[in-house]
Image 1 (cartoon, rainbow, N blue to C red):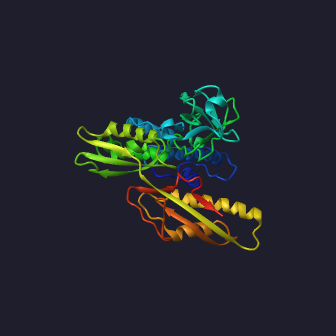
Image 2: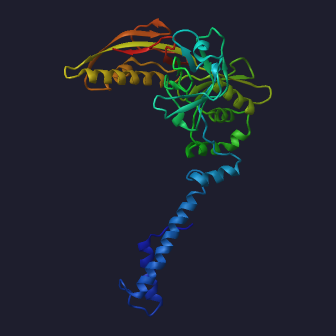
Length: 377
């Protein structure tokens, strides 16, 4: 084992050996002997630094970047590349619609053509329609499949974000009615290291680790819950939990393909979505006397975001905690004096104002059948 020596230690030891092994006695600073010793040992100390780095890069627990890729190559496991976010028409995400008349009247055709662009209001995020979206002469709306023009998480968007298009008619509108979250950056070192560490076990396939790693490799999947014997002996369900929003049909299809690649003969694994518990809440804020109208508007928007964030981030099967919900509201701003809950609906039914428990395969989400499920007054 090589023990590291710092620059000062190297110089002092060299000076001591020089005095013991030679007739040189002038080792003062600025002298020829000392200067030569300092130059040589400076390079040796730099070598120790390089040696430390190279040693660290040779172990899975400390390797990074290119060196981690080399370790992955030993197991034939490649770092996952960046992926482009997308949404299919079957998931009913990107909607083209008119407020009066029909789409044909406004466009003069029966199709939203492939290559049509949709983007955010500022144009920083752009998607392209990936295939022609046909509709009937009487249609007032149609859903189209779209694909981000670039890769990475920066193309993931929230609800009602993609509202501009380059169609010829200004009387046709568009919006994404659901979150789009399939865009991913190139796999980070921690995730890649975890997959390499489990390479031997996952290579065996047909085991829980192999199924989990295969499913988590699908863009947009944050976690999965495995349910053994869901449909009898030799079957299991994989409940897919997305990074944001609700799992789309396209994501479920991709997870199913991943399961099929690792499951054993005679076993049946099925990718499914969690059951959604719709939430509708209305809160009236009571402000302190020094809050201006502008302050109130900003605070209401922040409270709405805080409520939505709390709801969608409750883990699958966990409990909606009333006190935590109230605390999230009060933490938004010191100008909130109090708040009153006017509407408290779960499963589209009025609910006693308190904690709300759900089943292990359910998750909370703002009620999509409501035009504004979370309201702050």
